[in-house]
Length: 508
Image (cartoon, rainbow, N blue to C red; front, top):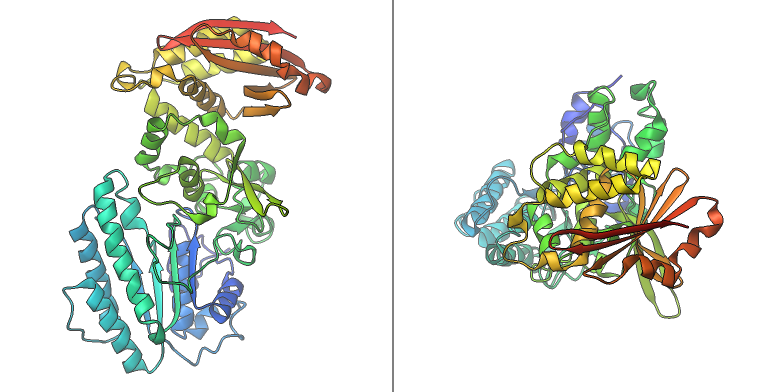
C-alpha cells in the first residue's frame, strides 16, 4: 500500500514519494478553464495548501506528475505559465513583520523566476514589478496563488488595532492584483475566513467565491466513498460507522466530507479515536468573544442564521456564529429558501463527535479550575440515566462551585441566566449526549431538552425567584414529547449568587 501523506502539502513530494493521493484534478481543471479569479474558504487543515500547490504544478506544465490523474490528457501542459505564490507563515504579530514576510516571499519568487527586481523595500511596488517582469520575460500571463490570505489578520484579532492596520496592508497588496489584471491569467486565494470584499478585496469585482459552490463542494476533504474504497485497505477491521460519527459531517453543499488530517492520523495512530484536528489549535479570542457577548451556547444545537454566513464578517463586527462556522466548529445542516420573500436561511450543526466533545471541553477548561472533570461528569451521566435528580443537582452545584471567582469580577456575567445555562450545556455536550438548546414548541422555547435512553428531561432556567418549573407546566412544553412513549421529567432551575438557588422537578 502507498504511504500516507501526513502533513505533506507539496504535490510533487506526494507523487515522487509514492504517497496516497485523492484525485482533485477534476475540480482543478474545471476551476482553471472556467474562472479567472477565485476565492476558497475552508477551515484549517483541510487540504487547501495541497490543492493550491497542485494548481502550481499544473501551470508550471509538469505533466508527468499527473500521469493517471483526471487532468493528464485534458490540459495543455506544453504551455508553462510564470507562477507567483504567496503564503503567510511565522511571526505576523506586527505590521513590520507582515511587510517583511511579504517581501521575503516575493524575493523567493523572484529567485524561482530568475528575475531581478529593483523595488525590493516596498512590498506593493515589489509585487507589481514582479508581475510585470514575469509577464515580459516569459511572454505569458502570470498566475497568482495566495495561501492563507487572511492569516496575518486572524493572528491578531486579540489586538484589534494591529489587526486593522494589517488589514490595510493586505488590502493594498491585493489591490495590486486588480491594478495589473491585464498581466494575470488566473488568481486563486485561500483562507479560513471570508472578510467582505469592501474590507479586503476592494475593486476585485471579478473575484468569485466558490466556498459554497456545489460544483466545488468536495474540492477539499475526503468523502465517504473515498473511505469505503481508497482507504478501505488501511481501515481493516475498523467500524466505519463509528469513524463516520467521529470525523465525518462537514458540509459544503455537496457530499459530507472528512477533514483529511483526522483520517490520516487516525490510521497512523492505530485507530485510536482522538481530537486530531481540534488539538492543532483553537483561537483563544473565540472563547473571549463568547464570554464578552454572554453568548447563549445552547443555541449551537438548534442554530439558524441568515446570509451573513456567506457575506462574511469584519474586524469591527465579529460574529460568534460566523466565526464558529468559518473556523470549522459548525457546519451546514440544511438550507431553507423562501422563494416568495427571497430569503435564505442556514441551519447549522456541530459537524461530528470530535468537535462536539472537544469544543465543549475547551470551553469548560476556560471556565473552571484545573481539576479532574470526570469527577463531575461521570456522576452527572449516572444521575441522568438512573433518574436520580438529587444527585444531578449535586453535580451541577459542584460545577458552579469550581468556577473561579475571578471569572465573575469586573463583569456582570453572574446576572445572566444564559451564562449558567451555557455552562450546563457544554458539560452535557462534552459527554456526547443528545441535547437540544432552545428547543422549539408551539408555546415557545424549551431552554434545554435532554434525551437519554428512554428518558426525556425538559429543563427551564431562571434568575432570582421566578418559578422555572411552573413555566414549563404553564407553557405545556412537555406536549411536544408526550406521544413518544418515554418517561418525561420536568426540571426547573433557579440561579443566584453564582450557583443554584432552587432545583425542582416533577415526573410527568
